Length: 335
Image (tube, rainbow, N blue to C red):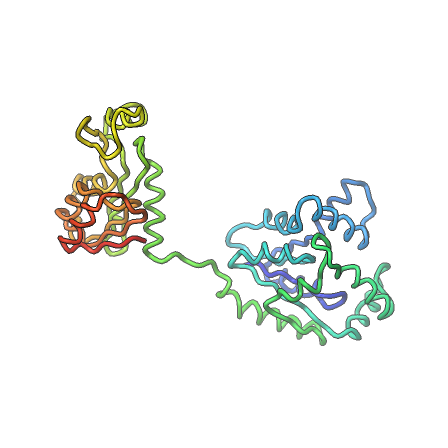
């Protein structure tokens, strides 16, 4: 999962990120990209310089450029904490991911100023007036600049950090515990899972016609698969192995005319059924997922193979096939 941390001066953003780092989160700061940019330009790294180069990059490469750069560092299955998120377009890009959560860390002005004075960094404000003036620079109306207040409004969770580091740690740990299961990517349902596989199978098609794929499933297990193309040991259709398909692409045979010139290609459903038979696997009571609704020839095979249900992805213009399935009481659905 990816936890984004935002907040005002001295609210405790870095402290929250450090706590997450100790929990094996990899820290990715958007400011690191800006520091690298300043180094390549041989410019001194300061808060004002970071703001300036950040605004420049957003203007030239898009307001979400820093988020895009950060996502390039993400590896599947690992946890990350993103900091220095300062533009709403960055958040919107990240929120397209199911595994992202934006957290706004807040504290009172008095507490924040006390922390800034205590850490005593050269560029940190020393009065409330200075703090508010600096924060104003990060809260513009420019779509390509920093908009911290707008970013904060996009956060799903607010962490109040007005007390000790220990209490903040407890809150961060509870946050992870509460959200770690909610931020997992959605799993496809069984129908879409199998149809996605059928769509991969169709990529093996060697037919000049639209590629099609089919799989036969029993008890949520794939027992056979097929795609359209010429039979084994016959020259591929895409290499001229099927005269009918070749002639159709030359405009000498009309689409749907299977009798003027015999078609050498086998359909995806046909191949899936034949492969099951070849391997001695029963198709009785199975389900067939196919990327196109079956033609009337394949419908006859499906019926006689004892397949109980057909789920299709795209409607093929052969009403005879679907009518046969209906008459034979084979369940039929278009996904």
